[in-house]
Amino acid sequence: MANYQYVLYEKKGHIASVTINRPEVMNALHADANIELSEVFTDFKEDDNAWIAILTGAGERAFSAGNDLKATAVATARGESMAARAATDRPVYFGGVVGLQCNKPVIAAVNGVAAGGGFEIALACDLIIAAEHARFALPEPRVGLVAGAGGMHRLPKQLPLKLAMGLLLTGKWLSAQDAARYGLVNEVVPAKQLMATAERWASEILESSPLSVRLTKESVMAGLALSVEEAMAADRERMQVLLSSQDFREGPAAFAEKRKPNWTGR
Image (cartoon, rainbow, N blue to C red; front, side):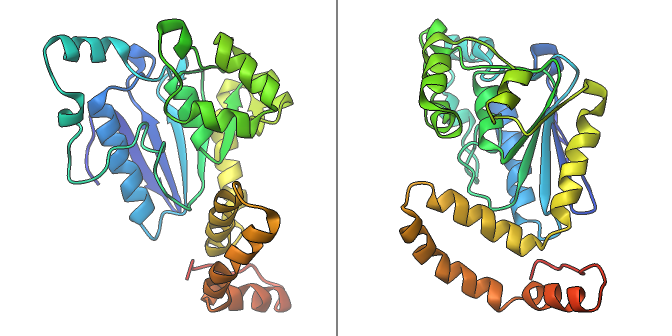
């Protein structure tokens, strides 16, 4: 596994752990960090043995403060092209997950501030587990920007419209407790229990067929913009993949034999 300067990446069993490792700047992301995160999540997506990812930030202060505006300003002043710096043989995704098409579950373990792009990264994940002191905000309009990494679109899909608009237009902070109350966060725990809780959620997901989990995520995401009837019609092709799989045979067999299933994802 490659060594990275701005990301910690390890795999244990079927769980991939990804840590944004720039605590000195509250895990804000510059071009090089985004390149590394994109490589990491592309590896996760393509690794048949990696079934779930947990994404967090280094330290106790921040999950991610979003785009590193200071680094961007310095690079721009030097005349550097951010697009050129991000040019690799693979696409670059903000935070590794915004824009990434991956049907494997990703859990955000939010260990502190998730602001701007950091909040957008969490919104792009499938589950959010938050430390008690975690806070969320999209303050881009306060600095003449917009939440262009999906925040303007994901937040209104995950919160009631008026709540989402209030946060988007004012840049106000949302506590972990309020985020959980509004259904934006799955669970809030003391900071010391954050990673163990995220791993517990991952372990509970691993009890299900990985193929079923991936098809469920793919169908849910694809169906958000469709009517129920249209979405169910689109599911039929995906169901054929499941019905012809080893996991489809293994599930009922394990139930009949009163044993735990031996899932393969095939």
